[in-house]
Image 1 (tube, rainbow, N blue to C red):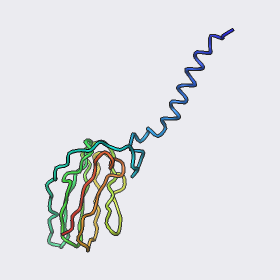
Image 2: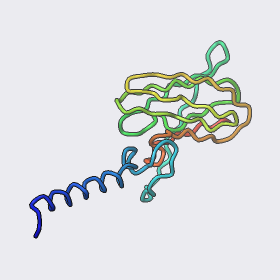
Image 3: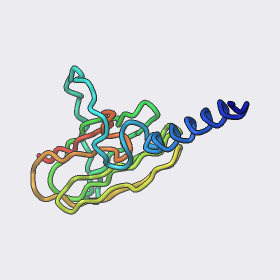
Image 4: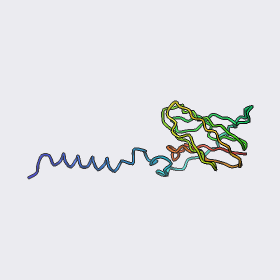
Length: 149
């Protein structure tokens, strides 16, 4: 003889199992900070125009980079000369971001909440191309580049 509560208990067990299995979904398909996440389909890549960091009277090169809810850095490519560089990251959206600077002395912004700004000053002596991914959204294509020439 079947009890009238059996279908409800089966449904409840299924919901609990689905919740447990989707725990990783808290971060979405990417899997969390700096995770490889799900592979993305190839995207047609067009070269983004580079913006040049402007040298101030104190010799520091400065540029502002905006980050937004569309998961973009603008400008995406920053060029500078070897030396002291000040990068101002301004979040013009609501989604938090964390931009890593993959230079020899690795650093980053830490969490930048919506409408917040973070300034990172670095010293880069070696010419090269240095990635600037968002640790939260890098696999969604939110990546910039610092080119030292």
